[in-house]
Length: 136
Image (cartoon, rainbow, N blue to C red; front, side, top):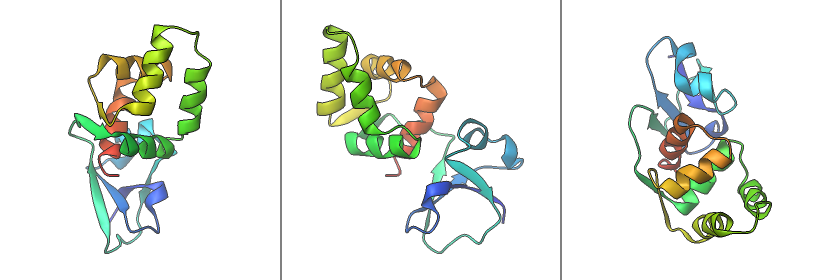
């Protein structure tokens, strides 16, 4: 059965399938994140999980978001560097505090949105990041 899978979940106990209908080549996970997802015709392993990209996640734990960022190719250390390189001031301190001390990240938090924008993430990418984080 053709399906979309998260590339780095292959060979793990958390093989991740994206809930999608044909044509798979036009699905946002493939179009927007080709280094994270791929189309496969391989057998689906017994142990697998589903990622439904048609829902919104309101909040995730800090660790979940950090693990999802890694899957997106954004290393948490790169976020640290981006914050460190900011001009000294309220915004830098707010981002630093949010990044290092938040237990939960709220999807619609204006500070998080500002931080994501400064990292070059679109709203759609942040939605996808939260959906992925919710599976971690």
